[in-house]
Length: 77
Image (spheres, one colour):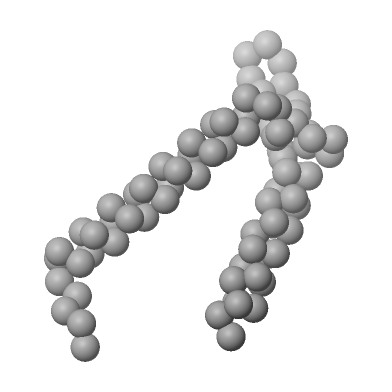
């Protein structure tokens, strides 16, 4: 059994931190192309406040992640 000490936990935290930073960078880059303003995404607000409800964007992200995870599990068999 592998040793799971503080050094190993630190490596995992750095790894997941880099993954989160990469996902954030991708989201920032996609935001420049208005990919998150799809029909079906609701925006309410006035001069001082704004509420954004990304219904269509969430559905598309869910479908893409489902396909990616399905492909990964298909090839791991």
